[in-house]
Length: 86
Image (cartoon, rainbow, N blue to C red; front, side, top):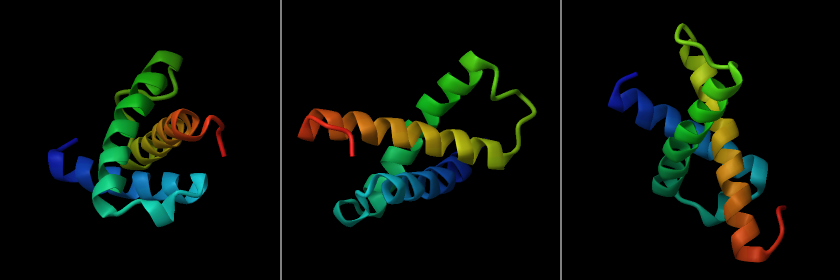
């Protein structure tokens, strides 16, 4: 996947994860992109490790795994900041 597609999908995944985790008010578009791209790395690792993500997966599967990874990342951030996962 190209860099531009990664940034766009990362932004969407970060936004979706911030909505799920209730952190949308405290995050801007730049943090959504960063969280989404890092979440994409986490989601790709988890997806490849479990066999959920294959080489012929489409962009929707990448979006799903990036969103799951971003939710995991935001859960870890919530745990560190507040001592609990929301």
